[in-house]
Image (tube, rainbow, N blue to C red; front, side):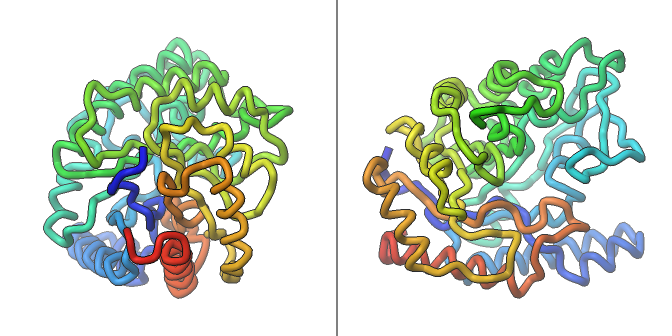
Length: 342
């Protein structure tokens, strides 16, 4: 698939919220909060431009966490006081969801006014939401039914975002890699087969314009060992153009995740750890990428941090300074791989 649209310096989408925005949200003044969000997004775009990112996002700055672009924009979900095993506030589905309008209204238009860099949007995958919000006996008959309803909403939103100028849409499903372990657990309420069917329904396009990519991030850390047959089934069933894979530990399992990828799919390698401030050694990273180059055309690749820096606004993984240093390191690694040809 090698072409000029690989968006080689990527990031997952969420950035550390600046102190001014955090204070405005705590103050509870809606007008002041909107103004602070506008300034924060403008500054985030300027930062990404300076760091030569080849895609730009709003940093998820207006949202509480990576799920709420969907959960706050559709009917049928209720926020609870409970916390899930992932530490996130638990939401439950009380009825099949219906969209009240766009999930990210005006997203592509706003970013296009700030920069010519390709806009990227990140959404939670419908299978992930179904697996984590379904409760037996409450609302939908099954997690699969819930996931299918969500897939229709997300698929329509992808088409709308693309029509608004967004060039890269990423769906996050942090549970999928758990299914690829040689001794898999069964996270959430969806089987592996149901999760594949639901996310495939959201990703499958009627038509995709030139230069547009739909990506899936199936998790933040590779399992200790990968079942290659399951990985191949994942890639064959979910027709994403781009797979955003963890690649920061140098394990055989990380290589296996890339090795199982079909020849016609892009890969974005999460080459720096977004959870630790210590910088990676560039020579070590390049040796890992060289190993990929023996079986995957590096022209069909991109590099990124391992995950978002603040998928939950109140729980940033690094501070703003360390985040910047990690993004600079990703840009440096891209130059080692491709020179200035971004």
